Length: 137
Image 1 (cartoon, helix red, strand yellow):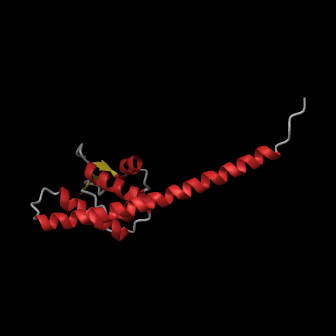
Image 2: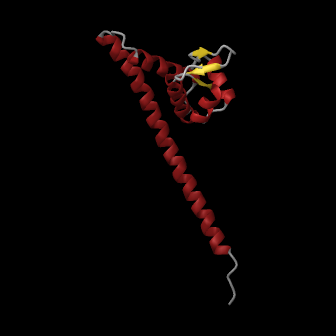
Image 3: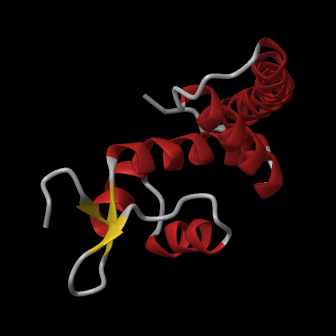
């Protein structure tokens, strides 16, 4: 096996994604292994791992597979080194901006949810302290 390729088990450990999830992303075309070993094992590169990390970060923000695909396509094109005319580059950048804005909105929603959860936990903690038996001396 080439030193620059890693097997799916190591990819799963590094990305904290299950083997099943990684295979699902392959089936949907989001991340295709860069190679296969002679024994048929999936082999991934650092670029593949980076793509999986983008997907992993998008998932809790409720991005759909189609939105993930769109963002990855836009960033792949921007990073390809391909010569893009100004209009095409701006269109790709606008796609990235759209996903950034959606991510920022989801982050804000999650902050509100977290604040409510922390408030609820504090309320329960106060109730437990209030009703705890007092120690007798």
